Amino acid sequence: MRFWLIFILLFFAVRYVLPIVLRLVLSGFVRKQMRNGGFGMPPQAQAGPTRAPGEIRVDYVPPVAPEADKPAGFKGGEYVDFEEVK
Image 1 (cartoon, rainbow, N blue to C red):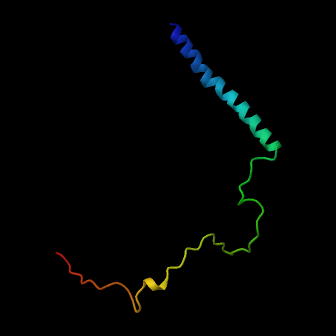
Image 2: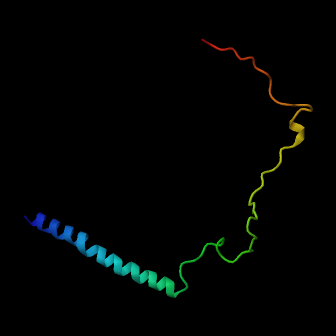
Image 3: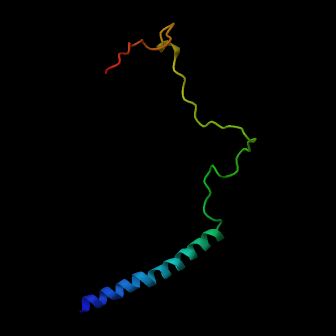
């Protein structure tokens, strides 16, 4: 009987009291953060160079493969004859 009483009290505490306590703690945390300058903005979102509309910024350009790897006069792969299977 004692087990069920403790179980029911814990259930009601978790179900009804814990959300209220969490709401109070988190709202205090958010208020404190906003008072201290808010949550840190990522470096990309901070002031940066302004771009004209339609301008593209490229962060990474892959290296170009050297031309020595390709044989001279190479125009594609070899031709493979196709046979239809019925």
